[in-house]
Image (cartoon, rainbow, N blue to C red; front, side):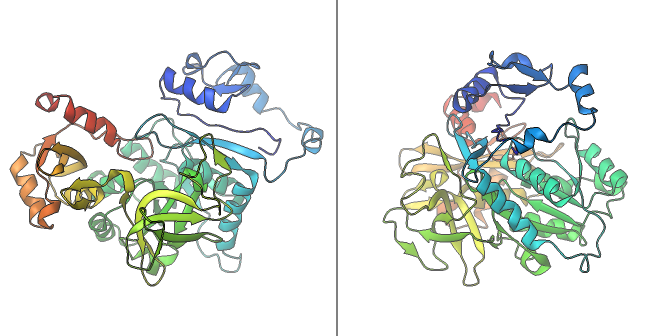
Length: 435
């Protein structure tokens, strides 16, 4: 990026058609891939470099590459630095343009929070990356690691016990995680086999983390700080964060607004700003908000630079943000709105349920009813009626789950977001009997 080259990372597990779509959006002239994934790429102007080839690997060991290349390039803060792809949970992904200014502002926030050498008593930060580098969560935590001089441990393919071994071997202090991994930490007996005492902090993002899961994690790992943050591809990553044990202890919150970030809660129908405690769509504005996307219209950014996140949230009186659900994912049961995430958090608290997702299911009388897809623990015989009864005892009548299907795994994006559209299509295609 310092050479003025625009970087656009893509999921190596993406299908050929998905990669083609991303190539059409970003229009690259050169690509870097492994020999296993290069066949998915079309022919490009400057070709494809194989990063596992002997020629490329030998190039990495060459000393003293001339600085004259760097000196000859002029880069403006408003130039595009990266094109990332937003989650395609309801359709094809879109390319999000992030500028050098966005990245500078993000890194400046990290430096603002950095402790002085006199304050630092902790060991040197060593991170284990469980989140994909092509996703905004991993991409900008990698930028943080480079800019802050931290040590990072990578793995070819994520495997839960392999991660535990790495924590013990490399004395991992920090891990960015998605909520399903926090759930795995709380439920897995494998954690008792390894020395995890070096672990100081888990930073959870990508999807909301339930209060019950957070509390169970703290019971099992009382010395590990579990913090939540909130961000989007369109905000270059983190827009809110929790700092310190006191803020981290507010398990339902994703923290306060990050440095230089403004936020407000807006009535999605009228556009009117709402006071603390009232739910509405979160709008954000600040120097890390994207330069634009290929469909940047008034639907995404207004004339004053406010980014419409599409998330239903509220602030409390102390400025802590609480994420309720996606605006477009609310289930419309009669005249009520039911947040799927709330029901999913309750389902995760059941000892016989490994994972769950809640979707809208069409109903002639109610319009939509909440339907749950549930992954049972191995050996569990929990029934549909027991799942529905478990939820019914804890929620208002309109929020009750009225349909249940059991499934082997919940489809998700690499960042841990539920692919609800796949489940909705599955529920409507007479596939329930095949589960």
